[in-house]
Length: 137
Image 1: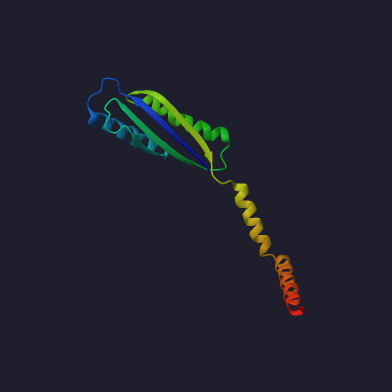
Image 2: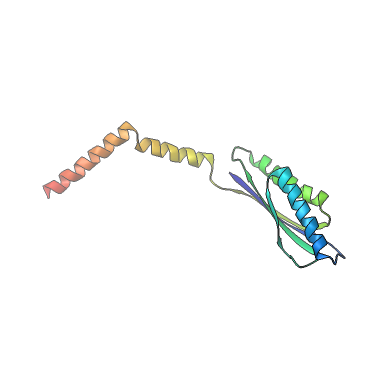
């Protein structure tokens, strides 16, 4: 699976009202959650009326191509930039891979190989050899 994460810093130049900032931030986060099904929250500068730091994360299916996953994260950032009530001064995002379908398939194949009749026969032969070796001593 892919995990898209971002940290966006917004500048509310001249704002003195913390509650107004919090209301705007919450409205933006709610919109992002509904539109993109992501986790979004103010993560720093809570009491600074002129600054806001928003963090977001998105879990993206592993069958998406890397370019598509990157475009999705960029689209979230663009939405914040165009719809935010303040100017974006820092945009930092990354795309992380956590596990892959190939890893899951390989693990499944290993488990299936362990449980196959051939694997059980080989394991039984090994057990018998080890028992015979112990019996000879």
